[in-house]
Image (cartoon, rainbow, N blue to C red):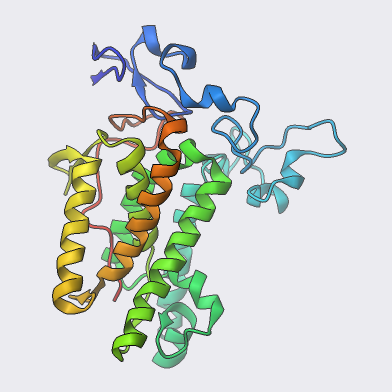
Length: 311
């Protein structure tokens, strides 16, 4: 049973809008009946209904959007993401593709630990004060993680929250948000290390996850989540709690506490709040709850046990 986001009525068989992620009764299930923000972008290739990530519809202009869209990563290499295909789960779901990349990179990290020395391993997977000029680590470090628990927490947050933001802004803009905030978060923590003279090596998607939460705190502040899977609160409250803890840790410990790069969290959160504030008026009312359902929404009620760690 779930509650309709418009009228508040309890529904045994709720409808989850695939475009905005909201939950509605039969009366308000149609996009035009719940003021779905995707209606404004029906003909916008950057919008909710046409994310540009994996659209292979012929445009009638000498090719398909799949060959023109910067976000159509799978279509460009000829992989089948159509209904029933082996990669159908990733269709219009760049969040899940990023999650899969995180898992693959972690497996590679684990294998490489036994094949190269620690200095070489860090030079590949971490963004550090020792070699901030290693540009490839700016991106690889976002998908790398320091352990299975680190990966699990970030994966949970990306699985539940990523698709919500992706539906709001489109896959291409989501990719820019995720990668841009992750890179800036890592560079921010390394910058603090260079200023203070501390040796820092960061990795993980925590900064990008905090950016996602920051966007949702602005566009869907009343979205209900479960901290540690049993403490109910709004995404806005959860974000404030994480921010307060990170600020305390940064002020008292210079940004690193228990192996967690809190300044990186703050940088990611700032990026998310800034971007969420820019788009909240045109996004409209966001969903207030998460629900499971194939092709209907990002996942069931839940939330991250923590935004992840940077060892």
